[in-house]
Length: 310
Image 1 (cartoon, rainbow, N blue to C red):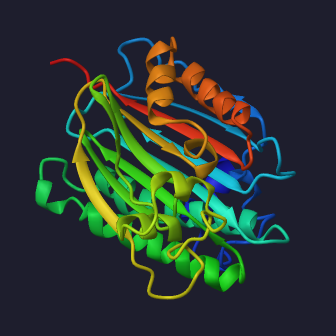
Image 2: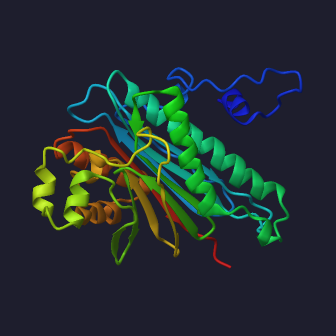
């Protein structure tokens, strides 16, 4: 894995080394794929203080599909010893579309492309610029939007017919920037309730917005999975980007439609706040989607913001 990231970011490459482009094929991106029905327990924070960002995730192939086209990516960076360096978190959920494993390839390529651009342009920049010079920090919303647009170009050039959703959350201290295309979702969860931060770029959602379809009709519509905006559909992709402030204890939840389509907002709240920890909550969310039919791949990511007290 160390060699993979060195290759990804060009670390340790000599002047005479090969500059061939990164392998964007399925084999080259296999390290981003998550095995179906695999629950991962994040490492316990080291002694000396609670981590400002706590993260958990779970994924399942579901009860109907025979392979997984969802990809999730989580990267969290905490710089202890210099409080001027902000907390960093990058979280991606991509739900691939297309036959003959094209969706699986598209979601992996998109996640890898976003990770490359965001870590290089944001996190590495935060480590190299003067931490006291706020004006030297990169324009975060612009970078998030361009990273998703670049992922679109990468998928078109290397995958062909495949496509994917992409929901990206970039956390810098108490700010979260959401970038989004497709119908995967990001939410804010707090004791006061749950708020959807993203807008579904689906045909049925658009018909609902126009008043031509009710929520009940949309839930059973034969074209409910048709997207009018997603990575891989063509050049000139329009990306939704917006930012929000986080309060201590708030949680960001990201998921594919295989979860939110089968687990209600009320059930999500119940599971999250009745679970002893984030990982148990993610496991239970995926279980609930499978119990509801599991008609698609299921991905759930939870990020909790807990800044240190002054």
